[in-house]
Image (cartoon, rainbow, N blue to C red; front, side, top):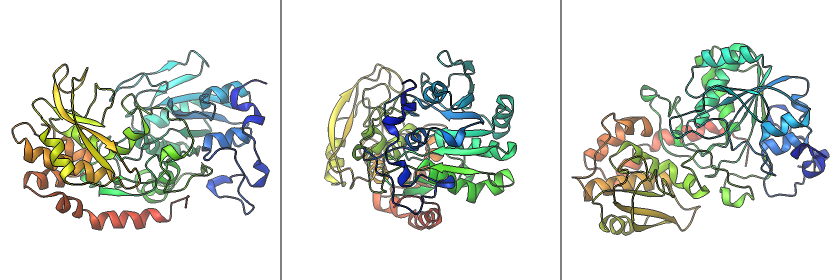
Length: 422
């Protein structure tokens, strides 16, 4: 038997009990019994023998996270199966095979393994992406990338550009859904459209608590009609099996594949919606260390910051005094003091509130060391200039976090009709 997950016996377990239907709806019969706690949309599609893609020219938007249960890449499995005609791959930030650092991509090339042309889709406009779809002569676009649940992680905005391009070209759009590693809760401020950028195109909250499939449903219904002049001709969500909204990644039984070079562990993803805010400050967010985003600090920071943070008794986290020398990025080759976040209760931990608390205490303790990046990058990350102005005015953590209660509640109501999982 050849072709990894085209080995039907490996994945095709009890599918007759109720396959996933087009648009992500489950059949009326009992859910299939899978041998694993959670099975991704890619696993489901492979177990079906790729039948939804048969006889069509397929373009795949993906990166190294697009793997099947046996860790074989979905593009390689499709190609080797002989059942799917993949005519193009579209690589996001960091690239299809994941070699590029933050803000980079791999360019256009021919994949040496499959000989499939790869197009650089990072940061391109929907019009340019539509031109790529036409050049590759695709009839269906498949999106399979593991998101980490934060608005400023760029993959969902590559998906949105691809959806707009799909409207322009009339092609089908299929999302191979994957669990949100943070669970299903929404937290943080909503993006003010005036601050839209590559790290946030549309008004969703900082931690959106949705899967990529759920976001695709929200984008299609709420944003595409205004931006693309209409909705997708066909949106098919291949749903995850066995995932519930209160499940964190460590409980899924899935293997963690770093979605970008500085996202090495599932715990990195859990802290990222909060500690990524330090990209907008003079403090290192830990790039150039073995624990980026879990390690934060700057030259001359000392033990007092850890003491200040632990005194707040933030739920689910303890702060360890640490010292580090970044090998690249901010403060490269300089000794920094700071903290490492240690998660003690992943369900109780609130990344956004924790990130705000870290910023507030850092500015108060080290006013001579803490500053905002000159380009006000913090405004793009937080979605407006509110956080910056509040912190500069001396607001405390509760005041900052409470300032977005109304918009967070409104977003939770808006997203409700687009959710797929209990």
